[in-house]
Length: 373
Image (tube, rainbow, N blue to C red; front, side):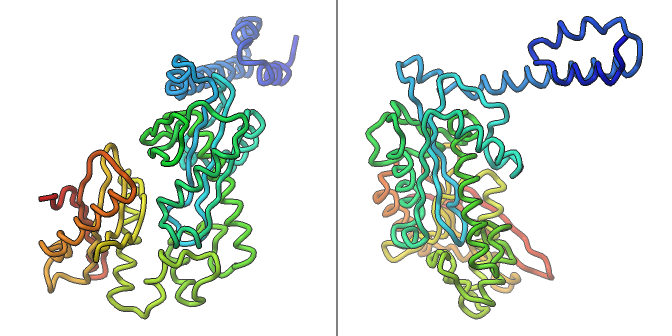
């Protein structure tokens, strides 16, 4: 008779597709250890089947493309729109038809260890992949949205063979003549986009860890360039390093005044908006004599958000500062942004209020705070 240890090891090593047949030989063995090993094997089989069903669902958009005759499909995604430092990175990945890679999902849902393992597997199985990197200087020059488009075009240009269709996370990429489809939250809905999001995330994280060795004062290995409290404090103490995005951080370089406090308010608003499911497209966009603090996307809407910060209610609620004149400036600036980026769809004007009072910080977000008139 086999020992419990031998049976356990046998079932652990048994391919999932053979587990039912394998466990039948031990069903009459009443030893608790054997029955526990069988139960664990069945749990492994059930988890595998659930994962296969999930992955099948993630191939919905790819299969729609296959039915239209497109067999080389590239998923594309970006990482690094919101940080105060470092480049924006995009990845484009062509996977084999109906390819399933266990564990692929939106990179933000995965642990660093899991992403690292999937990164290697994706690159090994991919027909082709490309990585686009656009620098902080270029971001300052053309704004983060245009820099993201540029990085996406760079990643696509590296693909060989050329894809026949592109699935992109949330955006329609200008200047690309390959048929494409933007999918809201595509990194959680398409296996190709999810794979691209993992590749882009791991690649950029590794870059920021290398920059941490060059500029150790800013904690880039842990914050990856995002505006953590420690990162902002380091900027105030040490100033800017070469990889900081000047257009994103200039407010942090002034003494503690209303401008600096407003910048903190914007950082808090960005974090809360991301938590609420908004995708940040751009920040501090200036045109037509006005400025828009945050430009975001959620569902079908492009959203222009004004952030107002106040310490105390002596002069009223923060949102009261967005008067008719301010609204007109925001609307004109939004119209310039829409025209510059050839955007179509639904647009919305929101207000984010940050109030510090009695040692506490309050956040309130108002959708449709005002309208085009």
